[in-house]
Length: 106
Image (tube, rainbow, N blue to C red; front, top):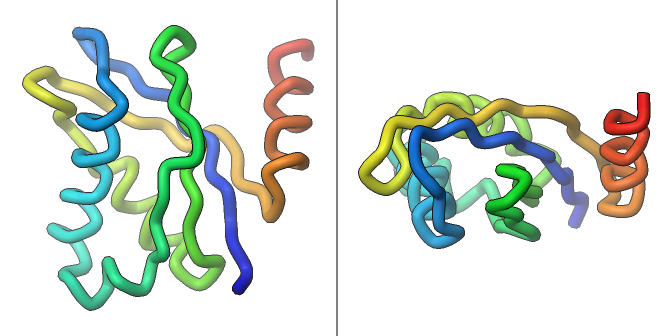
């Protein structure tokens, strides 16, 4: 099963909790693509860093576009307004982390 890893940045007017972030993305997937579409994504939250306002998501390679669309469609997390920006996509977690480090240095 081929996976894709998506690095995202969260902008919000309040502190975002990991559970609220996951729930907001999942609700967006369900709203846009329904239960069947959501079941095809194999969506998961790999890592969430509230201090850096970054997260790493995992999904099926076939559902990459669905998850990216759902991620940027998020307008609210918890009780606050929020936006989520896709930073990078990679086929392996190691490669994604390496690319993220390169972005910060460059």
